[in-house]
Amino acid sequence: MTFSIDKVTVAILSWNGRQHLETCLTALAAQQDPGVDWEILVLDNGSTDGTAAWMRERWGGDRRVRLVESAVNHGFCGGNNRLAAEADGDAIALLNNDTRPEPGWLGSLVETLASAPADVAAVSGKIVDWNGERLDFGRGLMTFDGHAFQLDFRRPLKKARVPAAGEELAFACGGNLLIRRDSFLAAGGFDESYFAYLEDVDLGWRLWSGGERIVFAPGAVVHHRSSATSDLLGLYNRGFLFERNAFLTAYKNYEDGLWEKILPAVMLTLISRTEALLLANPGMETLRIDPYAGHIANTAPRRPAHARPSAVELPPATTWEGFKVRWQGYGPREFLRRGLGKLGVAPEPPPAATPEAPRLTDERTIAQFRALNWITGHLDAAAATRAAVQKRRKRADREIFERFPAYLVPTYPGDQALFASPGFEAWLPKDLPIRRATLAEIMEMG
Figure 1: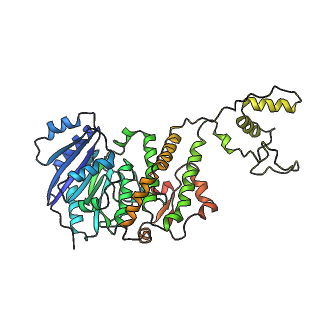
Figure 2: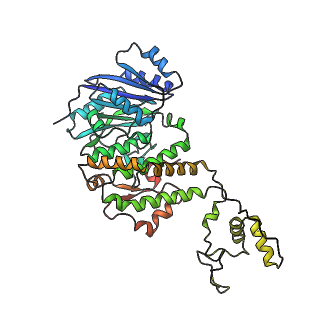
Figure 3: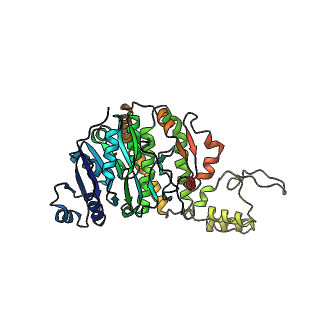
């Protein structure tokens, strides 16, 4: 049994992207006949660049094009959910506004979904760079903690690993996919708390756990101006979304029993990455000081002069490293007071004020703490969403991860040492298939 398609809605979200729409809509007007009725639905998502007025002037006479307006930006997730609610089609083709679909794009998506078994909810197309020379998206990989990568991102197409027609995917890219409208709505659509990023990973997991599948259509090709729209959000604001949404993806979707097993490794990774980011801020070396390792409480045992210091002891005060650690740890005033005391000089008692505190100045670190603050402040809502996701589960994670193993990829400062440690390895569930890879193995670096 296959899925009958009567009409397709091409859904395009645009936030201050009029210049992109000019190219995208022109390319859509040149589409080959997909064999079904179709429409174009554009949401002006709170733009301030005159998108709505331009749409009415330029495309108002096209019976196939409809404009939906919003006074505020609902994000990628909320905006596409609104488009799905407004759509007339029984299948929805999600397309980024900063793309140029090739003439056979829509027809390829329609043919693949219409000829697929009924349990195929969505079809993902191929995304290439603007010149058609490098891969943007063919297959996505998910990490054990909810992050994800585009396999062979930016690799030359001749070297990139592109899935075959009909091959199963863990998730479809939200910028180029065709999904049954009923399946999208039954799964809950995109989680609007995400705003943007990793929402397609989350949706893919929910579709699979709900008993449906996703396959690839290599002929559905779009050219993409990578990051043209996302750059408007700002680098560090995107970092906030990545960290928050990755945790939500893992928390909501791991099934009962497995979530409790993977949680320690997820939390240890989150803590380690936060600590590594903290150390990029002024004065944060003081966090490395153990006050009970012979530094403040004189707890360090005496050792022979020839013995090497242990890992927990401070370097000798006579070395530059020892001087630096004590200067940073005590602060200038307390450091001077202690030095004069050792010389037999009786300095005045120190003032009550504490040494200058470390300062949080790095924008990436601030984004990390904003993500943590959001997570702890929205636990109840996330728990309710998790309950709803698990309630509609029809397929076990064991079966999903046998198809699509979770990846362990050192990405952040400190990941390499953490992931290589036996202590971390001991926290990984033995029954979760995990593959280790480097960033260079997954994507084109530089």
